[in-house]
Image (tube, rainbow over all chains, first blue to last red; front, side, top):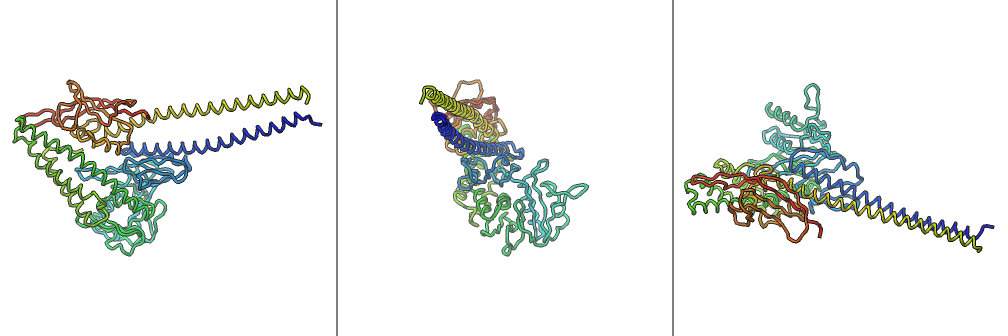
Length: 378
Length: 167
């Protein structure tokens, strides 16, 4: 017969082992989940730092760390932050304008919208993408639009994550248009050379594209009459640089190439509107900040010049005094611009026209400010 | 139960207790290790934050005339605009710029002038912080004033980015 204490040993041993095993399993499970979240948070922070470095220094970078985490990320337009699908990962606020399409490997590149007196830098982070243009007219404005869009997108030369450009002609996607000895896909500057050649040769006629957008493939139709198109269609700009973008969510007004770029990069029609609104809100905030700083700066300069003249340290005939009316003119027009962009001006045609008008006036005054040496070009 | 049996049970219970104590100590050790790692991460992240702010302010045209050359007219525009600075760069930091012009320390206030040489942005006193310094240049718009014009002048200086410890 088995002694009682041996039975006791067996039962006690089983209970204690069961307890320890249960405790270890619970600990390990939550530890693994926490570590995964920590890893994913580190990866997103690394991505944010990479975006920041590209924004500051302008050197493109390929970011491949997303493949190390099972979570997917996207931009939450309302809070301007990077959020994850699933996982207990905190939102990471975006401090710089970023247009991001998620995939395991993305190319991060810097872009610029330059008006002279104000510059809007932005960052594009995209996976391998193919952009096919379908120009249905062969006039100068159509080719200009294609050039402006291409200039604003990434140059992937020398990087593994490519951005390829080409044309859609009916049922065919033509991307092997470049290369010296054999036909190769076109990257940014090679494609611009191809466009230049076509432009100078009088243009080429294309048939309406029947191919739909793919996961990372975009078809961009350019036509004066977009009302009958399914998918993204852009009308060439008028003499003020304003045109329309047609999507299944409605008709939108564009006023600069970046408006078009965000429409093209977005993954679906709902995303397109979100990207468009996000871009314009970021641009508005950036411009308001720049106007505030510049106005303060110019007022200080004006006051200083006036003070020096009243102290007889500066002659009223000095060259710098000629800057006073120009600077005053800049301040007045920047005040007008502030008034125009206070609200969602970019959704209304009148707002957009007013914006473009003041933008052109400021550009002209700025040129004179530079010529007179009143300020420097940054 | 015989004495041998009882002693056997006691021995067994004691062994289990010692084993549980060892596991508990191991778990406490793991937790301590995690906390130490987290403190180390926090220190690294503070320095990263300071570095990130430094990279931005020394290259952004909101502050500089060219990389690492601050424009004094732009710096004056940022005085008393701490909220706006926090919007662009987050909070929990401050910035100081000292111009080495050979004169005594004069703090710059909102009104533009050419004689102050110490800019302070977002500094809260009575808070602990870590500092990251960097030699920079500061361009004064009204460096030399002559009857017929003005010439800007560039001075050497020191940029200090401070990141506060958590409250």
